[in-house]
Image (cartoon, rainbow, N blue to C red; front, top):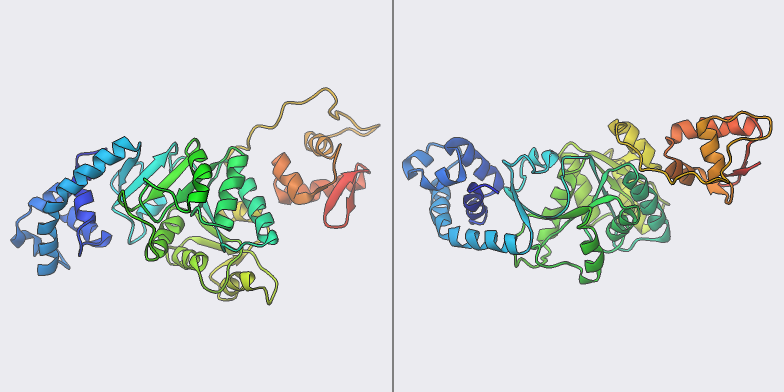
Length: 372
């Protein structure tokens, strides 16, 4: 944490100074401290700076005591402060036009060590929405991707829970200070994600959840992510705000199509119709679009002596052996086979077709497979 954090906190808390203006001032003066020390006459030469802005800068000096208390609270609460000038600041977020000057981070995560993908949607998630959130979150978690959401009811908490169940990486972007958790019912899961993931906020300690904070929070969810996937959403609400923010930030936006007449699919269908979002049906499509191929799959369980190593009179490839071992005791849909084996869905389709020709497996209704 640099000494300049003190001055950047004070500037960011000053009324009349937004993130764009603060970045321009720092670029002109050199550091946050120098912004406060620069004479008024010189500040007036900065493009876009008028008397009101200069007055706000002058008053920001009175917020240094508040900034000092924030630094002390951060140390007490094991929170790390990141400025937009720090290498550990989320790199994708840094380049949106209104990126926060200061972020509060708690947890064990390096935001730049892996790609981040946001899963968002309605708080009133249906069983279909839960199923699809589980599919996407599990698939991404197994590939080491940081699953980003907002800890809210519905799709958000389902995404976090599924990722945690896979020992994956997940980040909750919050609309309040990090000395509290909202909603309180999600505190246990929020604490669990600190082991391999974390919390992120632009709000000072003591800041309570406020309706105005949530749309601002959503720009961080989209800004730090390579892609935003809307699972289920009505025509209005936070998920659509996040999607539109991401669209303006030049992020890849995806939406799952839903039934006509279903209120919680109306928002997704609208995003697709307006060419804001691409239609998506499987997480592998997202990874192919983003060209995320370098990530290693999570380690598979060790082989046991009773695993299939051959089929009568038919030589097996490693992938065929893996699929047959998986199908020994259960009939599985192709999506589940892809998730558990780590075989790309595009490759798995052709593999299963060849296995059918060989008489190794047979396909059942609903894209389920079993050993023949």
